Length: 137
Image (cartoon, rainbow, N blue to C red; front, side, top):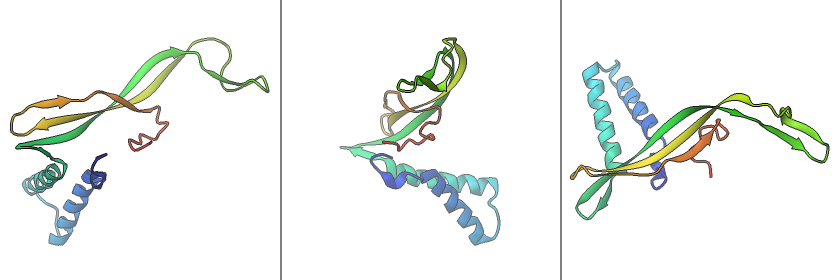
């Protein structure tokens, strides 16, 4: 999506397309129609995200994992000018804390050869400091 920003809301757009199609026919799709519509939209999405290298077609996707990490920590922020703790506790005692960490990794897959390239994990958010925002720079 970084290279093709028009895909930023791709899955939301799949939903909007299906919703509009149901409104147009005046009813909800049955499970088979819904499956077919979703598959059609995902195929179009795959075509938009595909990259071509000679005769090879590569599809990219991003794997996202949010991990809850339990740890013990000592945390405080002190204003040295006022000699006051402005955040946390300055008791020096460990506290049990749970951090939510978001990791992302790009995976590429070759549709013809079934070859895959697995990227490296990157931390993209920590305790929702970036609001889960993968676009934060």
